[in-house]
Image 1 (cartoon, rainbow, N blue to C red):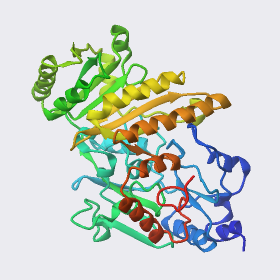
Image 2 (image 1 turned 90 degrees about the vertical axis):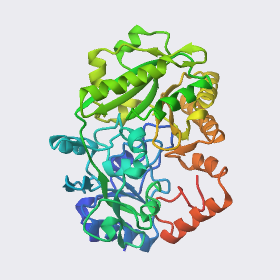
Image 3 (image 1 turned 135 degrees about the vertical axis):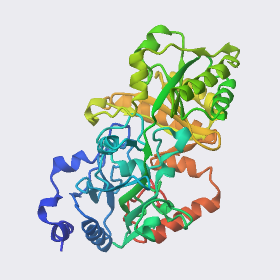
Length: 468
């Protein structure tokens, strides 16, 4: 029996496609990554369907790449070894909203807009990225270990996973976290943390079919302070950001250069000489508490200089204030409208922000590009995300070739400054792994081989014997 016939037998011919246009839709994204068409696309509607499809792929040793909304850039949904693309978007049920225990359980096809709206009706919210495509999968955003709302308060989204259900490479179904030992999805400890077998693996160890995550009551009052930083490449910058975090009054500290859309139009027009804007968000149960937090942030900034220049407190218009406090700002995603865009990102010590940005800018200028930067502070040790935004013309071969060279140089800068590359495509992962201990890379390969002995799960990525 052929692969297509076997797949049609287990989930029906209406949910199996070999159409050229359909396959093409899963072959590319807005980034510089090369296009690769799958051989066939399947659309399961249940965990049972997923299990059956995985068993077929495993038996015939055909590569299998799970996807949902295809909004996750830098090549993460592109099937490197062709084979089967499994689109999980039909699995779109909200399975539980437990207000008493403060968690939510969803399937892969539940998008972030649906999560935001359903929780808002109840006076709750979840950790959703600040500028996330509305169609993006909530489950995918959590297991790729990205940056959600208020990372200074909550940490990266890897910390937001209470538990999950996954289909292994042999078709077996497992649950990790408290849901694996009982009916509730409230935590992943004090158990062995088996969630880590799937979190950050980008589908290389199994197909995640359910996920549980914490939800929070919406704060009664919020406000923000906007600061202008004139010397972002100065060594004092990282120390200043750390000192603000040490006050423990802000829920979120994020920095943006002028071209990043989070910077309000009013602030831009009133400060043409400011290269970087720092936004500190606060919340509280009363206006008095929020005002006290704002006052503390302002007082601290007024005592500090960065590179010998005072930190400027910026006036924020009512419109810009409202827009920023209403984040996440969910957008309707269409990959075609981007033309070409990529945003290489790393999680990196705050003390390395200035030197890394300075070197990235110099490299970009040497290629004729002007980079934009976005930075966010995470909970815990003083580190955060450093993201570089680049726009280019995917239809221009010279543009595409140049941006590929440029992105390689940027990733080298990240890694050489102790950064961990987020959503790394295989070539970037290879650069990263060269900095790792031999024991780490060896264990990673063993885990992959144990979980996926036939090498069918999203091959060519983490732990694979050969990567491209």
